[in-house]
Length: 336
Image (cartoon, rainbow, N blue to C red):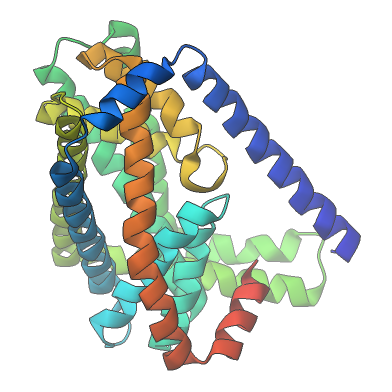
């Protein structure tokens, strides 16, 4: 791809993400009463916010532990490498568009562990897919414990579950059709170099998925996933308490699911606008006014940026020393 085409593609991506975020932010803020938000800020109980930040850091640590259990089956390496790579990735998601942190954390972990990047990226992508299935299933279960949810939305989520299950099955079964998948690059209209890169990418992806065929590992992963989402739900509950509101566990899980799936929408860094739109649509159903819902999710974003900023910043310094600043920057530039 020429430099001009690359610049045009990047510019188009920025325009699209800015447009989506701006539209969502306008939708969320158009009826917000600033005076009510200022009153809530004056009565904000900072202790709950600090506790939510500590709990959020714990969730990040468990996410790193979960990923480490997967990747270390290929090769043993220190947990700290996975932890710092995870922290840097989440920081990147908060300051860069298009979930760039997923690629960045995979590149850093691949370099830090000496494991090929295609395999590490495959485990990261498979992790996300399993996460989506676990979260959706948890939300559907929690819907049975709350009657404050429109039947139309309840039904739409139920229809989404088979789609997620089909995707999960397709991912898990892909190693069994490895021969067919390796033939795909051969029929594509591309030169030999690109075809070879595609074959290497497919091999890495299949190896990454094959790791999850270990039943014991899969059970540990699923247990950690459920634990992580309950911890994330507790963060929302603590932030609600900081503003003088209450969220039950089922409501917090449902909100976490809505936020989780909204993060798949292209948007500006930190999902500004998109998360606000979700909050003002969903939280009033649970008795939290739109103004407070807007503030709650904004606090969540600011808290997340602070936690990942501290941990990710430290991690960046550590990994630059371990990998080499020049090499790290070059590899990340090539991965864009």
